[in-house]
Image (cartoon, rainbow, N blue to C red; front, side, top):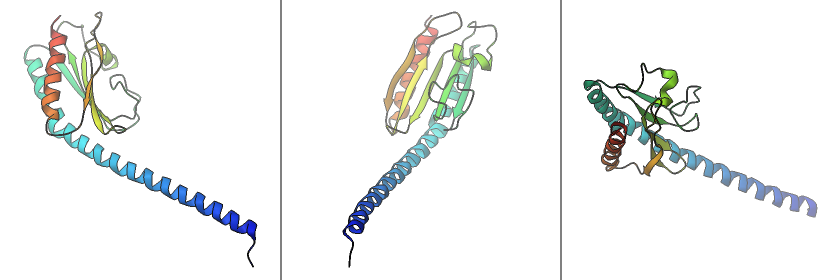
Length: 172
């Protein structure tokens, strides 16, 4: 003989368990998609962004300027002065130290110098371009330059935006 109270409770708990399982599966699926995107971004950062930043930086250095490339990989870091994002964001940043912009650049004052940043946005599965043209004792512009999907055209767009950024930095 069945107990109506037990039957109702069993149905209620079965429904609850099914919802919890569906939630867990959705979270696992999201995590898998994020992991794939992050892997693609890290490959892009290593094979496209870093060599581009290094090439541009070396060209700047040949003209008496200096540069630094910072990379963060989804880790909490106390030194988040240039990754203009939550401390657990994956990004790559080119910091430009124009000749005459300051006596000596210090890593503790990186945010006082112009930078161009490429961020991985896990939420939107795209990359975000940001920059600041601020220099010591000089105002500048800061903000998002755009966002785009990782694909074969990303490098061309990033090169174009980086050149616009450098034009703004060296226009003054």
